[in-house]
Length: 161
Image (cartoon, rainbow, N blue to C red; front, side, top):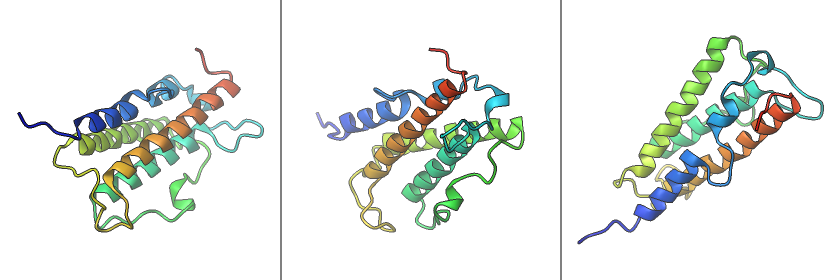
């Protein structure tokens, strides 16, 4: 019987993206984030929840598109990876950003889960990057900023264990 040697690796990557392992999860950090606090800063913390959410969405989309689209052009760093405002322009903007983040995460998961995706092959349009590297980058980047969202919620008095 023929087996897929990458099955375990794909499962581990999907676990990391979907369940976080030892990290807090996006859904827990973002769920019920009080609307009145989404644009609030706290002393000695450089970002608001909106800034973090949008940065995560933009960066994840950039990594996803780079992983699957040879014509993708990344936004200019750093300005193109952060929102221009500290607060969401509307509740609808917050909701749309969350939905877009979720959609792109599902697309990255589908790319990883697809047995036709060669996790190890250098992307021809890159400089040695592979889908495996990009998947780990998404997981790592998201975990870092979800941790910031949790810390921000704690500092704002809006985190309930």
